[in-house]
Length: 169
Image 1 (tube, one colour):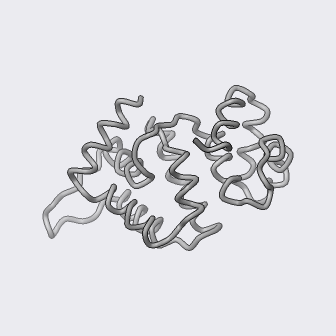
Image 2 (image 1 turned 90 degrees about the vertical axis):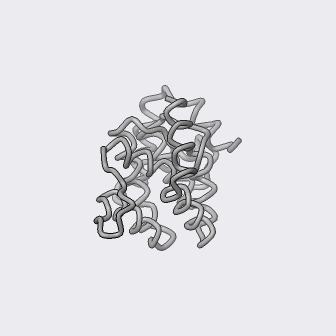
């Protein structure tokens, strides 16, 4: 288990601290998150930890199953966007957004795209595996992209992930 997530869970009901942590997601307000990050023993220069903290503060519903690709697939399912196996079918808006996420460069671009998906997860009541998300953001690579893509587009794998995510609700 991640030490950061353990701390976040411990302070989950501290509304003031959570409000300060949400500031980590907005460039002009990041300085307001630094004292809160310090209380969590997070280096204020660790952008990935700061973003995960801000995302948890925004949407603390979590699961321990799957990666962020599985989360995005569940979001797509909850939005009622069906994935057609017809070669002529258009991709769904969530698929397009997910493609942009996979193409994102590490750092601010990736963080913004992940933040948008976590906000969608919140609006759809979909939990997020923050432990895995923290690891994946820290180790962002083609391997992580492929794992997320596999969880999003592999039908058999996705069905198992969606049922696991729904059980976590």
